[in-house]
Length: 428
Image 1: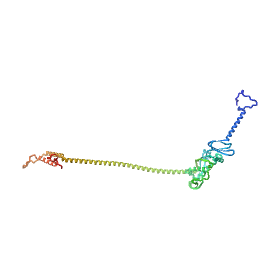
Image 2: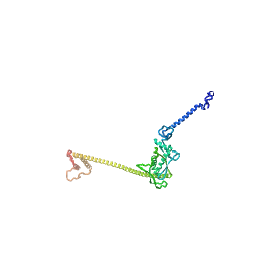
Image 3: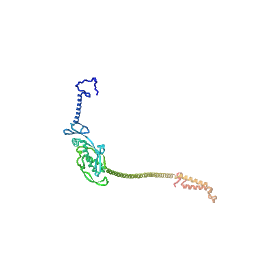
Image 4: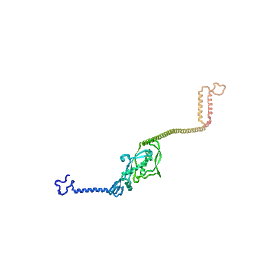
């Protein structure tokens, strides 16, 4: 390393003085800096072993050198005094999955055996929470000492026990259909609260291999006051751990069981399709009947409309005829009244002058007829020779006939030509 002093400006040292270090510092200062660094390292070491810092997502259990165990759950700094510190998460997720991305790089699924002899593996995860009280924390720490030990020695055996006692409560085909939700419910309940007390009962079931119905022994939960009896409390609850709901991502059945489930599902689908077709046919029949009723009702009402039109037309004609009859009757009455009036008028006229004007008109007409007849007569009105003297003048025959006819006409008409005024005619 090049010196910061020029050769001509370098200080002169005594022969007995210590030469400078390679860092350009006096050896005394260098030793002081070294001691200071060692002191800082020791201070940090002491601080780390005298105190512990707790994150908000952690719980800590400290075992002091004198043997005392103390737990802390709130975030902050706590005295350690060279004690052993074990931190636990507030909550963690345990995997019993067949998927390698959810836990260990291996299949960790749980094995189930059903009451019909079928087998399956159930895969999923469950989240669990550490107890929050010091008593349970200390006991849990003394029993297991680490998160890994809690999961592998407590949580997994508890889940395996619940799976082992859940399988016999149903058949393999039931677990895939009508009791699928019960499978999850039974596992969750037994893991959290303890395994059930069960008894063996004989039931009829279909053999998954041969498909033949047979009698099998199945487990049945013993109930008391509407609640299941427990063989023992769950170890989970004894240590104050809280299990959150199980999440199942897969149930893998043995090949023959899977085939039986598929066959059953197909049969159910066939039944459902048949039922749907039957309902469809029934609905179509109902629809056709309703359409027929609708068409019949439509035709009926169309006829009713025609009938109503005809009735209306007939009613109109009847009313018109009645009106015309009333009009004719009224006209008849008018004519009768007019005739009666005219007759009465004529009667009054007749009573007043004896119909003199008419009689005179008739008389004149008769006279004209006589005159015309006499005028056109070419024969002799009297004999050419008269014997004896009668005193009748020649040529007076026509005159005498006219007078005789006139008298006859006047008599027929009731005329008295010698009477003056209205008295010269008489009623006939």
